[in-house]
Length: 220
Image (tube, rainbow, N blue to C red):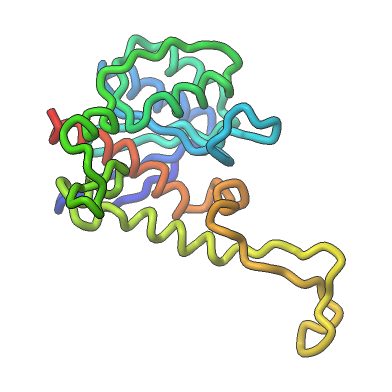
């Protein structure tokens, strides 16, 4: 099990990343201990009906720790989705659809709370209108920890290091003469291109359910 230690609002948090079936069994045991968890997914894009779409991770957590499960461990994802857990989400419809598309059937995962919807009722204004907006990071930066966006910032910086070969083009001069030309990946492309075992990506994925759990408590 890979463990990443970090902090939120001055308190220690831990992100656990499953690396083996043994890790998955331990994580399933944790999942059964609590009836309410916050939940999130990461994938290659927003359109789960696209033929090239893939789920990358399934993650859940509370205010102190989270568990990130790579999609290759389909069995434990299926088992956790079947537990009688009341889930907390930010934008639940997207993540439920992602899990259902990944598993190939309607899981019927129960929603305990939906922070995006509640935040809209609390204040429908965007930031330009004087509100806090309704993204998870913006809301958590406003109410939980002003540095709540640090994981997203680090991930986007990592996306900028990804290069994509430009088909049919080579450098004609300089030290790279004769080598294939490359371009920097766009931010929208980074989700599908970054190595899902990258610790920065894992930290980003694992932070989201922790943030969601804290935000739900604050909104409640």
